[in-house]
Amino acid sequence: MLIKNAGGEKFLIELLKKEFHCSAKNVLKGIGDDAAVIQKDKNNFFVITTDMIYEDDHFSLNYFTPKQIGIKAMESNVSDIAAMGAKPVYAFISIALTPDTTIEFFEEFIKGIKFSAKKHKIMVLGGDTTHGNKIVVNITLIGEAKKQDLVFRDGAKPGELIFVSGNLGASTAGLELFKNKIKGFNSVKKKHLEPCARTDISNKLNKFATAMEDVSDGLASEVKNICSESNCGAIIFEKNIPISSETIKAGKTLKKNAVDFALYGGEDFELVFTVKKKDEKKAKKFGFLVGETIKEKKVFLLEKGKLNLMEKTGFDHFKK
Amino acid sequence: MLIKNAGGEKFLIELLKKEFHCSAKNVLKGIGDDAAVIQKDKNNFFVITTDMIYEDDHFSLNYFTPKQIGIKAMESNVSDIAAMGAKPVYAFISIALTPDTTIEFFEEFIKGIKFSAKKHKIMVLGGDTTHGNKIVVNITLIGEAKKQDLVFRDGAKPGELIFVSGNLGASTAGLELFKNKIKGFNSVKKKHLEPCARTDISNKLNKFATAMEDVSDGLASEVKNICSESNCGAIIFEKNIPISSETIKAGKTLKKNAVDFALYGGEDFELVFTVKKKDEKKAKKFGFLVGETIKEKKVFLLEKGKLNLMEKTGFDHFKK
Image 1 (cartoon, each protein chain N blue to C red):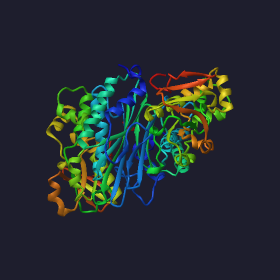
Image 2 (image 1 turned 90 degrees about the vertical axis):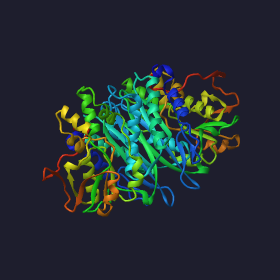
Image 3 (image 1 turned 90 degrees about the horizontal axis):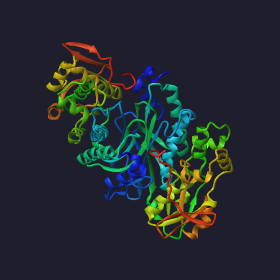
Image 4 (image 1 turned 45 degrees about the vertical axis):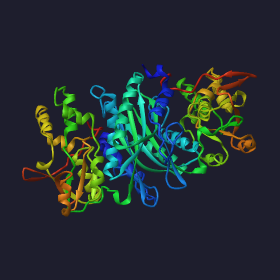
């Protein structure tokens, strides 16, 4: 059976979780969160994530510069480490280049890696360069955290509030603008080309967030993940989802609803997090209230006063 | 300028070494050895490597089963950890699958990963599954070692002996047999399809080897790496290079010299190591004497009584 018919990426992840279940004492988290967590010494942990991006699936040479490919590869990994409440420290970069790739391309790509590495204070310690028919970049990023800094997906309880750290939907809107060859909307397009992982606030959010995840596949998918790991459900307030006016305008031009970009698009790399009701005020300094967790293990969307079951999930490369 | 004209993979690695030079106190090795080494606690180190394999460059679906792709991806990484004298512990697997990939393929691939993981006692803690037009696998492997266990490329001194842990050339011979559609030679072909990293001896070799590296790009290339990192030269004794009789026979059938497979082929995943002369007897229990290090910073091949400068290097995917 083809993967797309078996359930796409979700099917693959569930299979990996089952096949590689790990109960070792020094492994705090294996597969199933934004990153794995292993013990470093008594009080410190290494937090490890890996992410692959593939030409024409995650970026196109028609609109990405090589530097932007480097930035995107780094930021998507940094975002996973930030979502754990950890600090990124060491990176390992693998890249496949094609017979047509020039050294100038590679040098610009390295500039993108260095740009993100400098911004987030990351040391690049290893890599692999190889050859293929499309450009593929894989980064493994190791972060560090003390136990009390770590925030997992499974810490939410019913009756908590769901926040998101910033505007959503721009990355998908940007991609659609490129695909449809629509001019202008440069600030929206830039969100697709140069995402920014939220290390600037993750070290503050981890003091009071009960669960956290980054928005890589759309808000719907991330809230579902938190709910399934935390054994609860949620209501998302459609009218509260933060979307920039430029992204809304882009949606109109594209004849699409920008809310769908936010819910089912992806790669915004903002943080979704849950907090106890008593921490609402604190949370509002860092983001927007977009929902609440409930006991019933389903995720609903409150739109125009109606509560509808949210069945659609996030972007899936196998189903496009 | 195209990468192949600028020097291929060697050029890329040199650029990475220069761009990402790292002098942090807790980083014992950055780019430039088989793996990076970072401090875990007072006496223990993490040893980290990453390796990407790409369909039609590193494996072909015409002769690899999905299980064998999993095995090859794992063993090539395990081999790097073994070459450092470390013990592999944690693996992170990224894989891009194509629109045609079936769940049965993915399940068999996982069996290959599990086969190697079980053999080398490795826990798989994370991964990424994505989509592309060819199958690409990237593995990041984390090993552990005490300081005294670690063996680097830069520890050789002139006047030492060079050993290799087993027969060379079979993987390249196997690949050539497949490409030329020659039947038989199953034991040679199997060396290409199911390499075996030498964790069985690396924990013994690391007690007395002065420098060590795994044979991923051919003996010539690996000895050159050890020499350039150790600031010395070497003489390789052509007639001592261990090659199985089956591989020699395969070479004859292919009308090629099996010694060239050993010197300039790759992916045998044996260990090359240098030892002090007083340790010759110990080293002979684990391998074959294939050369010695010299003061002059050049690598020579002693063939039929003549000393020839070895100018050719190993396999380069950009130059094939």
